[in-house]
Length: 309
Image 1 (cartoon, helix red, strand yellow):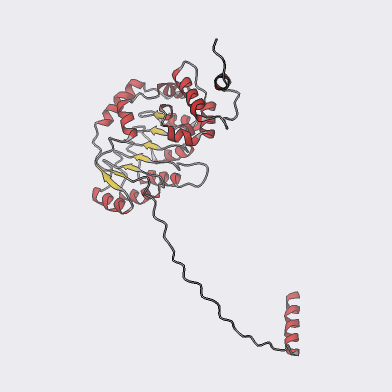
Image 2 (cartoon, rainbow, N blue to C red; image 1 turned 180 degrees about the vertical axis):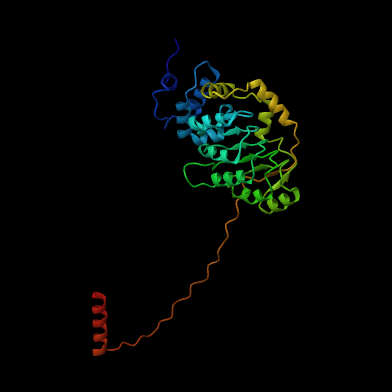
């Protein structure tokens, strides 16, 4: 019989008491939390949305940097209800979100305000989205409150014909943005190149080499257990994983020609150095003392009386 260690005791307790936990602070992400996620997503044990929320609250930074499959979700071709369910259950757990072909409109973008750990957002082929979508995203990304999209690094707007040159001025307002995909939008290529180049971006031939694109292209059925979990709590979730795979393959055939990237370490503007002028010694000013007269006392008294009134 194997000897129980502190790790196995901690692991087994958390695994069997997810409904009773109120905090995971102090528990190391590696190996405990990471192995717990592997266990829950790869076993027959049912998922617990409260537990996923706890992880995202106590280990947000680790979730963003770990690149775990379990934080990727594709709702491509799903109704808006699926996004509403996800935004209400455990939005902070998601770091990669594919919302392509979901018939989204500008008014649906504020639903993303609770996805505070989101790094990649794909809104491709939501044909009714306009420049107001980019305004909403910029406001969420630059928000100083506890909600918003402060860590958003990649945005895909492919085939959004109603996105025009007006959206360009909002792109630099995303403080951590490293990639923006504008292929087959209403943006004029020359205008985008001129404006975004001056803002620290450079044009890239395609986005095919990005982590997100490679994952969704090679593994469109990633994270099936999370899909099934959302399906159970969303009555409108009707598209199967196989249908999503077909949609993803279809979307991948679309050429991506207008893509801009920004260096993670160089996109912030340099801090302007302010040259300090030498401080000159003050010249001593000789002030002659004058004796107070009766008129001085009277003026002072009248001023005090006026203040009292």
